[in-house]
Image (cartoon, rainbow, N blue to C red; front, side, top):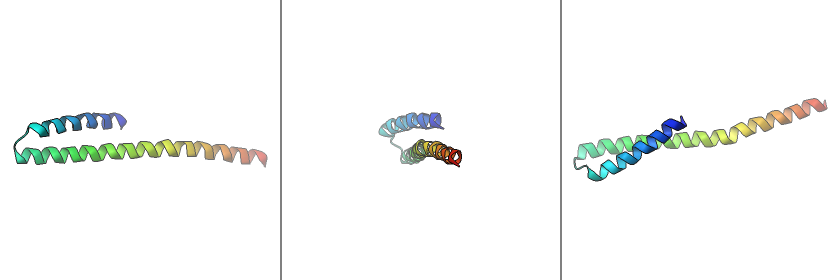
Length: 73
């Protein structure tokens, strides 16, 4: 998923460059729609990455605490 996100960032930069040189309103609207979709997808990937960075240590710490509590009984 991260690789796809990086690819879409690269494509988004290309779309931004293309928007500077396009004169047709229809093509501009299409490129802006693609750029918005790519930006949304990249933001979702970043949110999921941050969530995983926080959630995985939580699971590890929770599991470690449960093992400590079970060993005391």
